[in-house]
Image 1 (cartoon, rainbow, N blue to C red):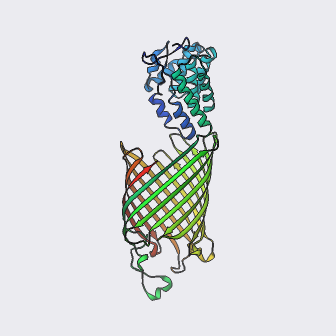
Image 2: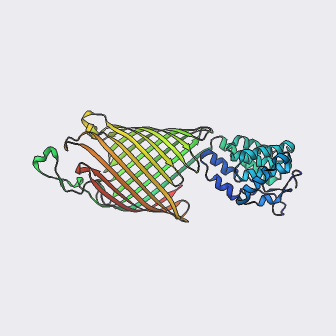
Length: 464
């Protein structure tokens, strides 16, 4: 059934009109976009019309390899042919296929200036606006198409669905809840991160000679199981404003001894604002309770502010600042305020961060426990097979304490290296098996804190 003198609705000769998907080249481009714009692009990717130009039917069969040639050939004729609806429609499609959304919009607007009832051209114009990130105008153009009485009902129903999806995007995307459960079993060579020495000389009591270390101060190995679970939610207050919250819990049980069993519960809540250029600023509050040997060990509360700027090719840079107050049960000399600042680079398959800061005790008698720190972290997940990815990470942490240790009569200096390597095997889209090995080495000028540790474990992770 012809809509205009230029475009026909058709589907392989069948009577029922349908919509085709966007071509693979466009999907490849869409995959490289971040955040809100990416969602608008992906939404737009499903709305290419199965409309063909009567004057140039071969254009509908163009591949990504020839799209640029088509665009150049058509653009060379713009001075002579601009204003011809058939030519401008072809030029608009060619511009869309090569990512020239601004030129596509101009060409398709010329079509509609002469043929305002051309629903196919208007739908392609809406797609161009969506791909350019202007979902307001895209929504308005689709709403106009839906009102066209000549539009076939199946197409109208799909367009109506797109309008509803745009409305949801314009309202901020609605709400979402996600979570995971991770359970694993393994072996730990040093569950208490302690030295392997059985005796050391304490400078303050050096006249007594080497002192024998108690069992808790010497490295202990054990098998363990570990369960971690988390749930998070986000809801839109508007197009650019969201609130979010999460709850994360962890339990680690050593099979032979409970002395170093650990548990933690962390709650986070915050607010995020997206700017027109897709940058995001957020502020969040966090509280955590940490237990050791089933008794409260440390309570912390703090605030984090973060700024994220999307880059090309699915990357982003982040900058954040954090303050936390730490309270240690039964050990007030360790109570401290922690200040940290961090820079990060995030990609599709990696994350790198640089963090620096200080942890200052709140009582002068605990000054030797205060320290400054710098940390570098790099993590990656790289596919190696259809459903298998290699995961790995490296981290280096340098600490310098502020005052002499009262027993060892020197300022403590530590450097720590952490390595992680493993696999992530997708059993289903939500269930993963994860064998992982870790290695840690802490070098310290005080022998009591110099240690080596490695773990191996196998776990299963379910995401929802």
